[in-house]
Length: 241
Image 1 (tube, one colour):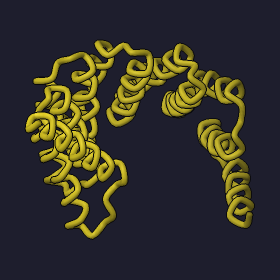
Image 2: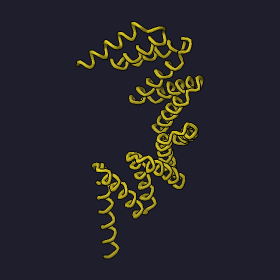
Image 3: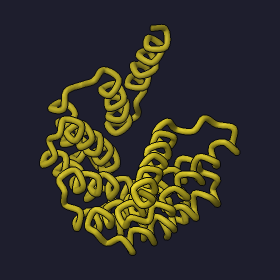
Image 4: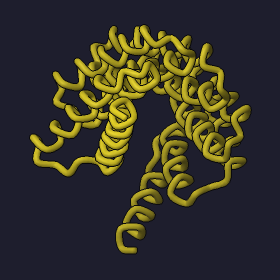
């Protein structure tokens, strides 16, 4: 409660000393997020900010937030409208990092609507921009996301290549979460192709990575290894009977 009260005082102070409409708008945006303001009120702030001189960054940020709220409510058409609006504003100001966030959101929305071909278009542009920015962590995540879309479309060779590149980056960055996502995707494809040995290898390598780091292995990984082991044992028994 004390932290909330302090935050309220800081926001009120920020609004009082704001030098212009833009600073005041940013303070209002933070306050609205803290108080869980309605989507309508946030949408109104987006529109007002866009009319202010040099207000595009604020308007884009609010529109992106509104898109996320709509997506959480499964209102995907509305989410796409605000996400596209945010991206357009960020392109106008050449905000490359913001464009990456916008493309990631549009990619996620396309997947939610099972529009995986459209997701691939956003993903390709996202990866290209991340390479330009030399953002290896971003590339790792984007390649795994694109690999998932390729796998969903049955493009397994392309998916394996993307997951493999994502895994290489995750290993170089020592990012266990990234390794988990990439290996999980590679294991999925291996199982679809009935290459259970490769699937087990990917999952086992994931397990050992967490053990070597002294961290608890995600329960889902252990459960999947157990299920795959049980399946392999059952298959072997049938072959021998």
